[in-house]
Image 1 (tube, rainbow, N blue to C red):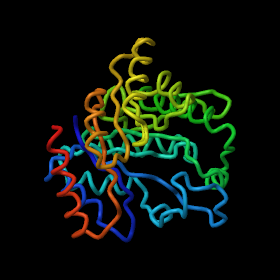
Image 2 (image 1 turned 180 degrees about the horizontal axis):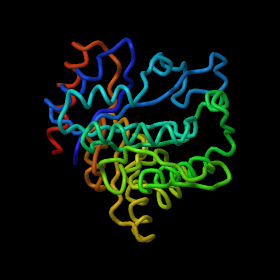
Image 3 (image 1 turned 90 degrees about the vertical axis):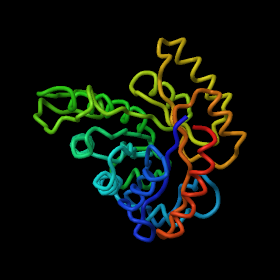
Image 4 (image 1 turned 60 degrees about the vertical axis):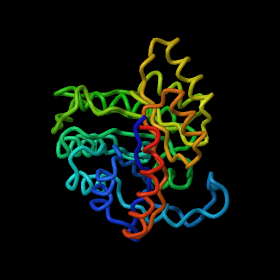
Length: 276
């Protein structure tokens, strides 16, 4: 089982280049960065974790810029969005950002996507929360068309464009792997029909991971890779993930200054060593 780090990169913590170097030095294989373009002051949507919304949510850097900085300081580190809020993004611009990062990093991008939870944030981007699931399904299909076709076009209910030229194409063929975040029935259907990997969150028990693995196998997709997002330190849970055949576990790393971050990474690397 491989290990990575999930975190928020903000203006108040370690810089992405230094973090990327530190991860490679300690044997972590991946960096997963969260995305929020902004947080509406109204705060009507409740924070899924309960209580007050953590400060990092409204201070996080753009994930593609931060991952590019990490890519420049590393050689092998996988560069994940964990997750990009695709329903709040222009799909054509996003296709270019992902492909550009994949080119500049030498093919190290994994594109994690999700529909998000903050309805006011979505609406500020012109996204109707009730149709965000249908929207992201079309966006994923449109991204694949742009990445794999010289003259790409897509005609759906929510995404519609006539033939376009767009380069660069991604280094990875046919395209960077797309990981779907979430555990709902809709997310799992999206995983089955449109994605290359699953990104369940840490509260997903190993028994559910096994169930999803068996269900995918029944649908003719037995080898879908799973990356657990934001895992805790429970050795029982880590052992369960390993037994369930999880490819990768990512520890949730708090956003701290560089010296404190390096100390915490030493602790997490020691914990991961027992499962490699």
